[in-house]
Length: 81
Image (tube, rainbow, N blue to C red; front, top):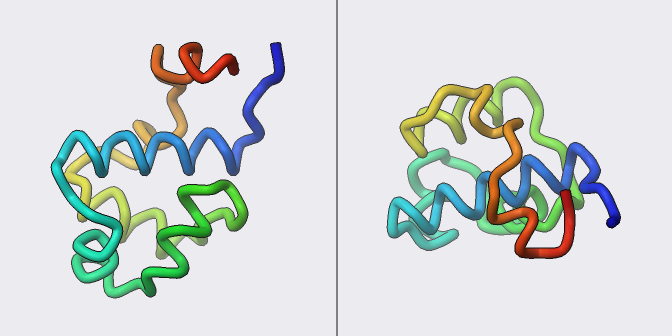
């Protein structure tokens, strides 16, 4: 099985938590004062968030920053570990 890169893992976690919270990418962008493009880049694993962006994302999603690094059983459903 292919492993997720750290960028993909963080992106998947941001997306999953955002959806759990019932937020659109636009709502998350508004809450974090980040661009919609940046939210998309992070969620797709194209860009890795800076420390400031990590802080904004974790606050907007109401999670501790370490939760954005933890893998989730949903990752296995994607065929990745």
